[in-house]
Image (cartoon, rainbow, N blue to C red):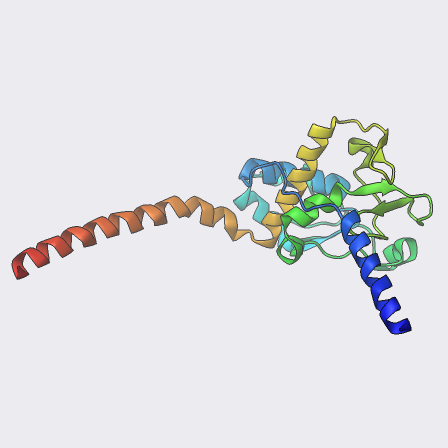
Length: 227
């Protein structure tokens, strides 16, 4: 009897927790070079101090995204000692991060492949002020996350009920564009070849259509002789 009551209680708690979890929302921006460039700049400004994307080298951004080397150095290479031919790593050491946040921030190169862009976008929009947490922040999608809301200066501060209690520098729509660009940047880092695939896709489809037309005409010509 006790076991059944315990199981029922756990089920009720699980249903309640699921009801509080926000639905995943896709970022309201397109996956293209311009958006990825903006996302890279915002990421470098707000996220790179703690999180690495070490499997993406700075010099690749000059080829894929059209950044000049000077632009990469000025806009993206904030850590001292960074090198064009090396991965994007933060200034914060794992030891200091563990001491301050309780856990070292993970590398985000493949985060979008692991969780999906909609999860990242929703996560970044789900922070709220929580004075009971060591960082002062909590997250509706990922409760008790160690990460603080680093985007609060631009998006504002919400309470646990989702009410805005302090405005940010940007409007909600503008903040969503920034968060969406960061998400698209992480989608790019998880699959850099996607840009090239999308560029070549129309040519590949055009070849398939052309081949189908030629094959159909050949089939008609062959069967005309047979009949």
